[in-house]
Image 1 (cartoon, helix red, strand yellow):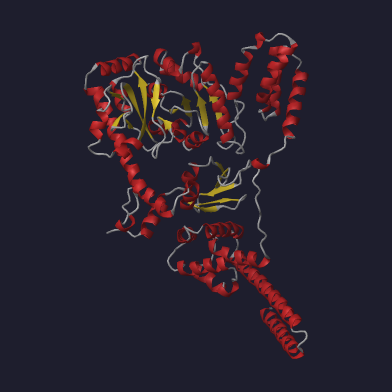
Image 2 (cartoon, rainbow, N blue to C red; image 1 turned 30 degrees about the horizontal axis):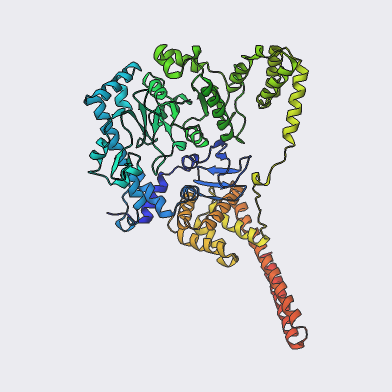
Length: 633
């Protein structure tokens, strides 16, 4: 029996984990029962963005944004509700009703591109392992020289693209349109404008999979020195974004979780060689520099966020290490200190540091792939186990050149380049030890070095912040009446209340609400409390009802956060909270009525009869209020 849209939405929401969903966009750090990070909706340096996994919601206390997992996806990816539901239904294998399958051109195109890439990967692989030709033989020889066995070839679906211009195109055009093949990056328009040719020709093919295992792109290595460039990579597409995808993550993610750490390498064959020889928690960037999105991706798989940078040992590799460390630091900014010293006797909790950066440098100037193949995986694992923290790597690297600078002027220029590294050390004791080490190595006065550090610290502390770097958060002033109405409505979301929804509803009359949004929410709650069994179900249903109304979703999030102040109350205190806010609302209403009567009286001042009538109405209202208060006492 086909499911309704409401049933499909409910099933999808049950499968979504709010922490996992948010972690795709935000690096989170657990604190108590919540997770915190830098808000993706406004610029900030101190985390004010909170995720509540128990209730399945998020809330930014800086800009006020809030919602559930579905609304987060919609806002961060700028997608409509139905598009999100269709994508998630496809991901979870949930069949959508036929009435909702129209207008899926983009989704269908993506599916066709994925299928085309999968067929291409299988085609290339089959050629390499089952066919023979000069280029195939050359490819197998190259792979053998790199100690890549048939087992490894199968694991990574390595293949070969023949030299001919249309071999792949002729195979795939039977099942796919030219548009699909071109958008998937498998073919290119011919120069003469007549038809299409294969994008990759005469190259070893390295299929690229996303973290779910789908084939989305390809890397292609040249077979001869005459071919340029050495590596040819797929361009970004609807199914592939190199800045958000790491090569080898699909096969490495379980090992990353197990080892609680990830090793970042540069090249495809670095990753293949490492994983094939038992160093399985290795991933690589796909022909691009490391990005903050890459860091967000891997931080989801390592609780301690332990990242090893294992780039080539040449000058370019060293620069990549420095650049990579900068990207990692920026990604974790505001979430705590980066680990800067090794404890030999203190057991650090997982929340003590925002992340841990270590640098893997094989000796003898060998690249990771070369070292693993020639020296062995066990030796490489030992290097990883003893890899220095980033600060130690930077200091050691800096001191390697100490003998090149002899005059005071040379030393001054040299040390100024390194001062920012020392300034990054937050622990004063640890910093003083490094200062002493550097001063001794360079044969300079330790006090002079500390003096230069203080100058730099002062200079950094008074730098003005440009208007572009600041996003002003405007806090809305809430009236006493609106605050009381929100307090009153929030009691429905108190998780440990001793009262049923029906009992709470009897205490809170709809007439107490004057704010249109809150009236709307109260009306919806009235309808839902007959069908839900607990607070979490109520919250879940409300967010679904208002999925396309972000303003009301934000109000819901505010109400849920207010409700937390009323948890742990006795039945008497809980009831008192309700009564106090009702009294406050009645007073506000009374003040509004008095003000209204005053204005009427002022306007009727010249008409004695009308003025007398208004005075009598005001007197009656006062008497009725006095009687009502005496009865309540």
